[in-house]
Image (cartoon, rainbow, N blue to C red):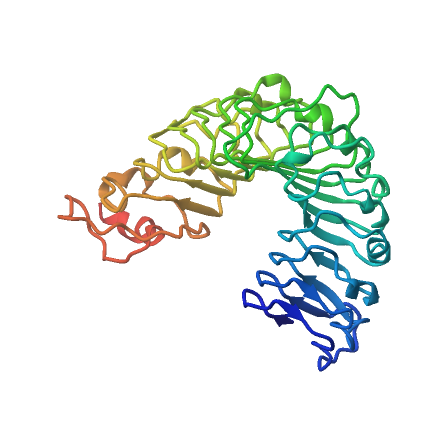
Length: 401
C-alpha cells in the first residue's frame, strides 16, 4: 500500500511508481486523495499497469479523467469524488468497464447525467455524491448496470427516481442527505419493486413518519433509519409476513416503542438508542420471541417487571438511565451481555444493598462491562471495593447485605 494522502502533490509524473514490484494482480493500492493534483502523466503508473487494483484520487483538482487509466488492466476500485469533473470521457470509461467493480464519484459540477456509466458493465458497488442539482434523474440513468450492480449509495437524492427500480439485482441501498437542512424524503407512486434488496439505509433524511418501504422493497432484512426526526411508524408499514431481522432507529424523536413493531415476528436486533424513550412497558415488545439484541438508549426511568415477557430470548441488552438493574432483567435466562450505558457516577442504587432483590442471580456467564460507581459519601449498605465490577458485586457482595 502506498499512502500519499493529504500532501501538496499537484502533478503525478511519469514512472512515479515504477519501483513497486508485485506479482499478484490487483494487489497494489495507491492513496493520492486530498492533494492538489491537476494532472496525471499518461505514464504515471508504468510498471504497475497489471497489478494496480485500488486507486484513490478523490479530493483533488482533476477536470478530466486521467488518460493513464486506460493502461491499467486490473483496476478494481476507483475513487474520484470531490474533483472538478464536468463530464466523463467515453473511451476511458469504456476501458474501465473491463475491470472496475467499485466506483465512487461526485456530480457536483455536472449539468447532465453521465450516460458513460453504461460502459461499467462489471460494476458491483458505487457511491454517488452531489445529486441534488441533477434532479430529475433520467429514466435510463442505470442503463447497462441493471444486472450487475449490487450496492448503491446516493447522497442528496430527492425524490426516489423511477430508474432505480431497473436495478433488479440490487441488494444494498443507502440514501443520505448532507446538503443543508433535512429535506422531506418521499417515494413516487410507483408500482415497481426491487425484488433482491435486503439492506436499506436512510441517513439524515426528514422522515417524521416512516414510509411504506415494504411496498417497494418487500425482501428487506435490514432497515436502518438514522437521524431522520422520526416520530411515528404506522402499523400498516410493517407487514406481519415481513422477513425483517435487523431494525435500527437511532437518533430520532420516538418517545415510545411503536406498536407497529409487534408485527415483526422475525426481528432479531432492535436499536432504539438516541431517542427519548423513558419507559419499557409490559406489552412494548409484544410478539418479539426471536429478538436477540436490544438497545433501549440512555434515558430509561422505568422498566416494568414483565417487560421482557414477550421477548424472553434476548441475549444482548443495552440501556441507560437512573434505574440500575431492574427485576425484569433477571427474567432473561439467555442473557449473555448487559451494557449499562451512561450510568451516572452517583447512581443511587447500583452496587448498594438496594440491589438486594438481585441476590442469588447467577451472572457468572453474563458480561457486564461496567465498574461500580465511586460515591461521594458512600450510602448506607455500600460495602464493596473501589473498582469492583458490577458482576463481582452481584456474585460476591450482595450476600453481605
